[in-house]
Length: 237
Image (cartoon, rainbow, N blue to C red):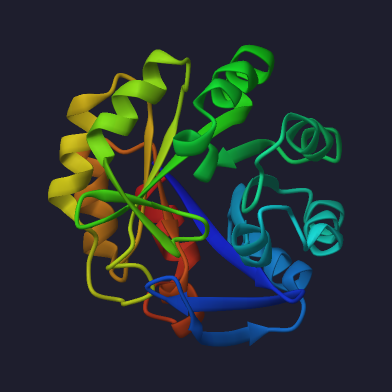
């Protein structure tokens, strides 16, 4: 199982939100590239980077910071946040992003998801961001009536080869992942699933591994010290 540290960027800084609430922000570092180097030194191979300003505005806003992460760390970067046009996805891949994470367009422009999957294959990932089982979009600020499992089935039919699943109510809470929802999604699709939201203990990672996830994204727990990244990678990767 791949242990993937998360770097959320807002205004060029490394921050964390509580349950995706932009008004509940904690700034952890002014230099995202320095944070990336810290996680690399502890054994990370991948980084999960979210452009929070991009999620809110519909277009990536922190590319200087993202490019700094890629250039400085040479880590594999999966990037989400405001990627809602084909030309933007193509540009990001050309700039060194390894995987594009799509969210809002899975609901609003499924034909674009299909086209990007046809063009870029494994480089395209869809994020299933759920609140009480229903998908939220536009940086989690807008709820929908779309069922998370229904969306995953539809996206897999369009050619999506990987999902990130986040339970919004668990994100940034240091509680625990929604294991039941993760298990249901893994049973529903025939492609890899990466779990996110609420991971705060090594035991959580162990249980996710037993469920069969491909990877686990850890954010706040790394910044608070609840999880030691190097130990987690050594024990679970």
